[in-house]
Length: 269
Image 1 (spheres, rainbow, N blue to C red):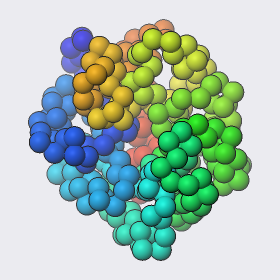
Image 2: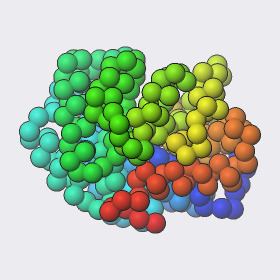
Image 3: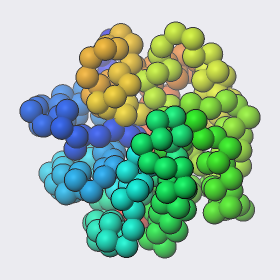
């Protein structure tokens, strides 16, 4: 791994609040900041994590948060949890709503409850003026249909498709609705040509990079716990595919992140 002297790296999606970081969270964050990360977005996916997300963003200037109910937990969605979420969303460093969406691969919650929770949370996000962070796995058609109903004709900046895993045709549909696409560490694995094609296809101002830490660790660290600092491997891959320098790519991704999450009434530089 090369050593870079600039500080424009951004991890647009991770889970620092999870138990995987309970033992050494401070050290993980300090390593990431020391190795050139300017911003980190930590994403709380169920109620048990919301308070920890707020604690983290209150402690570290470069870390922002998002709050939402993951599709695995969508059966829990209702008025009580919505009230909790709305309260958390008032925090000035909560800059996104998510991750929300559909996961028909594991189906930990019934499909109908996933769809209802997704639609309801989109409405809350729109009322609060926050971009949404979308989880979509084995649910391409349904995700596009729901988002198209909600955002047809919207302008750029409605949200991001996190951990993008679909093809170029689907990417075009999401782009047409105003979404950014976020590339995970899996793009560093073998046999990912379809994602390589997506990276080549995306306009420069609609691409983000993420770790999804502690999951999806990029090569050459695959098999170990992921950390935000390892987003550099993903950014290097994006730079290589797009025939750009690493500094140029990191700067573009930094600007995209700030445009989507920090240019509103919340957040800031």
